[in-house]
Image 1 (cartoon, rainbow, N blue to C red):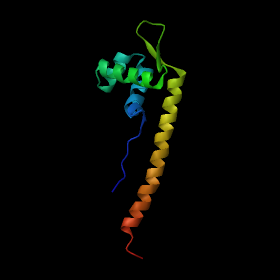
Image 2 (cartoon, rainbow, N blue to C red):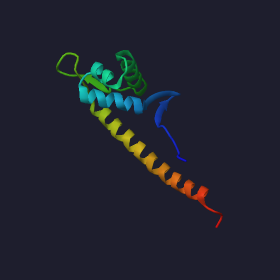
Image 3 (spheres, one colour):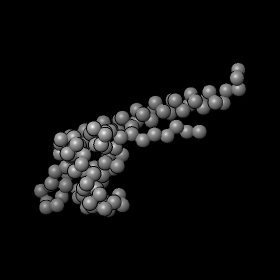
Image 4 (cartoon, rainbow, N blue to C red):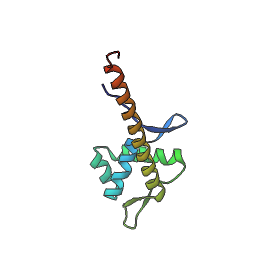
Length: 113
């Protein structure tokens, strides 16, 4: 038995950030290109671009900016903070669920004593 979960953040019922967008931003940071990031993630450029733009619009802030080289891309300082906070949120949820899972396992394996 295992408790499962997924964490994402919505605004007005629309996703603004989650693991997929986290992965896109980290891949952009690594590759310095949305096209290369999309390829690394096995996504189309259009799908990655659409998710990125939707998050920027829904949050009302830029997550990426073009670099000095044409077509290069880098994360904004705010995007880095969002990644850090989202990953901290995921870690906190993992810890909570691990404890709950452990407690539930004990309960279901208790022989009534």
